[in-house]
Image (cartoon, rainbow, N blue to C red):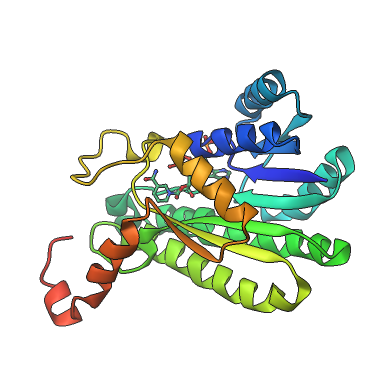
Length: 244
Ligand SMILES: NC(=O)c1ccc[n+]([C@@H]2O[C@H](COP(=O)([O-])OP(=O)(O)OC[C@H]3O[C@@H](n4cnc5c(N)ncnc54)[C@H](OP(=O)(O)O)[C@@H]3O)[C@@H](O)[C@H]2O)c1
């Protein structure tokens, strides 16, 4: 049995790999930067003594996804838990003016997730157990001028996870949607948030615990559930006048 962490070079994902290692699970850390993934795997092995191996993963290389799932299972055992931590915010201005940039953001946050999840789920259905954890964003809850390309891809991923959970419920597989607010990582580096920002360590604990209890949807930090309740309640006629 193994845990696959996709997008392992994210600090949140690295912390999650350590948590699964500490729990005694064999961990597969997969990233497009294989050298960095090797360093993370070594760190997990040294600090937790759990088996951990690095794998090459590019969300945009759809044709490689099926083989990756089989390879991980071959090396470390059937995949019990898969965490989709990869994502790319891109730059809104570039995404507006250059469709190739928008396409990359959509594929990195949505299409690549669908491709991986469908391959993972086939294996999990055969073994009759498994958990998918999708890291999405509060940005996917309402379109805003400042990041609607990334937001719409995350929103699509959130909706996809909801449907997948619905499909898999009777099979006993769990699908956990993590709606992250601000976490202190490369993605938010230099951002003036005006809202408290969580640490990757705390975020990873919340994600680990949510998966362990088979939660459906979790906001982290928790107060984002309230913030998004207010944001969603603003009538469109007023919302479109805001510079958000
Ligand atoms: N930080 C926040 O406030 C926040 C808020 C909401 C949601 N999130 C989500 O949380 C997750 C983790 O992000 P983070 O905050 O830790 O940011 P991050 O450090 O930028 O991590 C993003 C990860 O995605 C990987 N990635 C991007 N494009 C990829 C591709 N085509 N193929 C494979 N891997 C790819 C990156 O790999 P490289 O190292 O190779 O670039 C990196 O491992 C993402 O899904 C992000 O959208 C973050």
